[in-house]
Amino acid sequence: MRILKYTHSLVRLEKSDRALVIDPGSFSEEEPLDGAEAVLITHEHTDHLDVDKLSRHPDLQIWTNAAVASLLTDVDPDRLHVVAAGDSFIAAGFEVGVHGELHEVIHPDLPPVPNIGFFVDDSFFHPGDAFTVPDRPVDTLMVPTSAPWLKSSESIDYIRAVRPRLALSVHDGLLNDIGLGLVDNLVGGMAEQAGSEFRRLASGGSIDI
Image 1 (cartoon, rainbow, N blue to C red):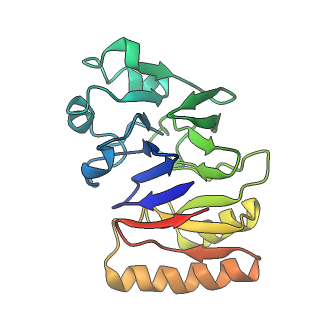
Image 2 (image 1 turned 90 degrees about the vertical axis):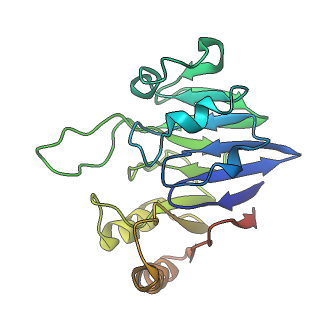
């Protein structure tokens, strides 16, 4: 499997000339949708869901939760699939399991929206905006590293809880180069102590697992 990381939360997975995309939001590029067969959407926030992008790619199959599906009123229902924690399915040739239910708390006055994470080919996990710990080993974990709802110590604790072989930074589009460097050094050093490798891919960067 090849993992391609784009701006903020968008990730593209490729295998055997097939591709799926996770969370093509408003902060991210549209190019990664070209040639993809499927899209997985973790939750409804605009940095993860861009309805206009999806409308320009009418052949994409979409898997997401009920809250997001309710917003996609113009999408052909034949290509919209509603899933929840415990479900499994095949998208673009990838085996996908669904974990998690809610977004992390931004503030106690703001009820958390539904959020699901996607476990792909029993090795790769993208949690969306949550610190969901799957009930099975994770080889490669996408770790949120910058958001109004998190601090770096929580990213570190998440890596320690999951203990992946490889932790890749995601949800990092809100930081400038100074902030990215600080997070890389802090989280990377603490992840190494926990036995995990931490890396941040530049936009368009890739890694094979």
